[in-house]
Image (cartoon, rainbow, N blue to C red; front, side, top):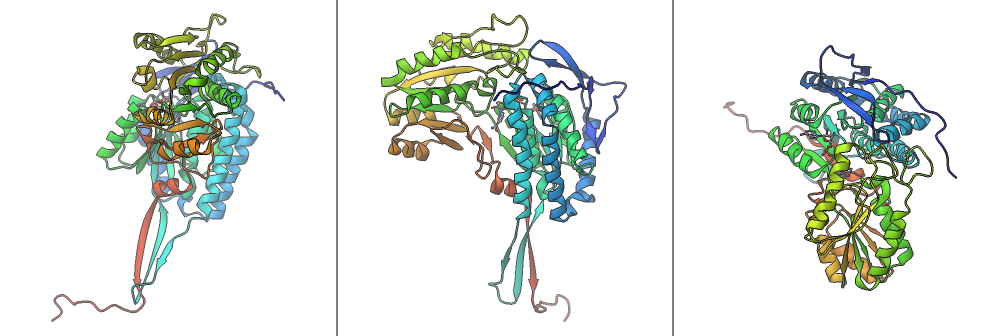
Length: 501
Ligand code: NAD
C-alpha cells in the first residue's frame, strides 16, 4: 500500500537552541546558517548557531538536571513511564517529524516514516533494558558483604550526523538517558529541523527540563565547545572517521570516554553459490537505500567471477531504472543528496575512479531530468583492484564499486583489506562459505542473505576505524553507567590504632 503525504506542516523560520525545556530567544548577534531544501535548493529556514556561551548554558542545565534534578533519582517505574510517553508522543507526531526530515534531508518520505517508528522503539527498548539493571553481591570474604551497584555516569555530549538524523540522534539519546544520565545533543548543522521538533516532543511527553538540551551549529564552533566543555562526562558520537578522531583527541585531553560510531566501506560479497536474484536485490538495496548515504552501505560489491558479468549487467540495468525524484512522492526510490557540497564530493569520485583505471558502468553525473535539486544518477564503477581509492574511501552516496574475485579466501582477504570494519553482507547458500565469512571477516556485523536488519538486542558498531564501542543493551550499559563497589563488615573490624599507644 502506498501512502501519500496527507498534509504539510509549518517550518520554523529561525531554529535556535532549546535549553531547560525552553526555546532560546534569538540573540541580537550570532551566526546564521541557511537551512536548505535539497530537492529544490531553496532556503527553508535559518539556524542561529550556538556559540560557546550558549553551549555552556546548555551543559550547566544538563549538569543541574543530573546533579540535583529528579531524573537520576526517580523511581524506575516513573522514568520508564516518561520514556514510554516519549515513544507515544513520537508516534503521535510521526507525520510531522517525517515531513520535516524529508524536507530537510531529501530522504524518501516512506523510509523516514520507518525511521520514526524505529526511534519510538528505541526509547521503549532501552527503557525496558534500564529497568532490569541489577548489581552483584560478594560474600566470600568472611565477615564482609560487598555489593556492586550501577549508577548513571553523568552528562553526555551527544553528536549526530545529517544522513538519518531522527534514527541516529534518537539512538544516541535513547541509549544514554534511560539509565538516569542527562545530555546535550548537537545535531548536524545541515539538518536541524526534525531534531528541534524531536526535542520539543520529548518535553511535551513529560521529560523534565535539562535532561535533554539541544544546541545547534557547526562542528568547529558548537560541537567543539561541547566536546571541550569540562562539565561533560562522556561523548557519544555518530559521524565521520576524521571527525571521530578529532573528537576522541579533544575528549581525551579531559580524560572523557567516547563511544564512536563512524564510517565504513563495507563489502557486499556475492558468491556463485548465492541465490542470485536475492543477492541482486540485496546489492541494490545495500548501496541505494537511504539515498546511498548510509554508514552501513554495501558499497564494495565483490562478485565471484563465474557470475560477475551477468550480475553486474543486470545491476546496471536496474540502477538505470531507479525512480529518482521528489522524496515526498510515494513512488520515489532515491531523492536528492543532502546538500550541494556533499553532492559535489560524491561526483568528484568519478574522476578519482577513472584516474585509478576503473570503468564507469553507469551514472556519474547530475540527473538531467531535474533542473534543480542535488540529484545524481545512481552510479556504478568496476574497479581494477581493491587498492583503488573508490574501494578504500567512503563516498557516502549512490555510488557502487564492483570488484571481481575468484576464491573464498580471496573474498575474505579483500573484505578485510580496508581501514574500516563496520558491516559485511554475504550472499551464499553454502553453509561452510557463510561460516568462514562470519568467522574471518573483521567487521562488527555480518548480514547473511539479507539486507540490513537491525536487531536492537545485539551490539552494533565497528571494528578498526569504523568506531569504538557499541550501541546495544550490554554495551550501552557499560558505557553509560559507572560501577560502584560498597564494602561493609558484618561486625566491627579490628583495626590497628595509629598513635593510640
Ligand atoms: P561528520 O563527521 O562531518 O559530522 C557529524 C557531526 O559531528 C555533525 O553534527 C558535525 O557538526 C559534528 N562535528 C564536526 N566536526 C566536529 C568537531 N570538531 N567537534 C565536534 N563535533 C563536530 O559526519 P557527517 O558528514 O554528518 O555524517 C556522515 C558520516 O557519518 C559518514 O562517515 C558515515 O559513515 C558516518 N555515520 C556512521 C554511522 C554508524 O553508526 N557507524 C551512522 C551514520 C553515519
